Length: 188
View (spheres, helix red, strand yellow):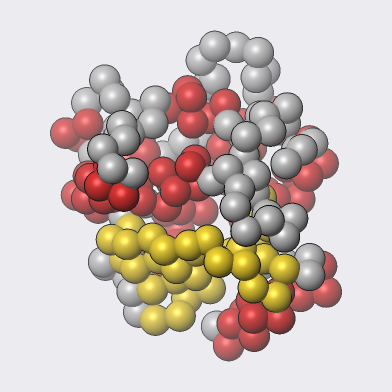
């Protein structure tokens, strides 16, 4: 998926404010996420780390080997190998362990590698943030625009979703945007 500074600006806006149903693409991809400690707190954590990454993708000199981690939450940077993983809060350590299990033994992401996935010229990120809807006290649906593709590069999203404290992440499953719109209206 091609990303531009304009599309990153629109994505950042959707991370800050829920998008209008009138702007929705025909279909969206859904990830169902179970969490502990409340869906609202989880959603704030996930949005905070994705907002920081998208903002850096828009504004940082992505040619640098190490992008500045300005605005990236400390709990997230603590999970990067070699940065004192034991200092991470329990929700993040649990999520990291869940990610490792989910990926069959995959390693946690290096922070700079993860941030580089949000650069405008990076085509391996096959999604853009759309919204999150709370469907239970400890369950959220994460909605992303995958341009209708049922299979797309989303490992950086999975890492963020797990790291923010997920207990289980299922998906993606493509749905008509009307499904998102109905959930959006129910959770206002």
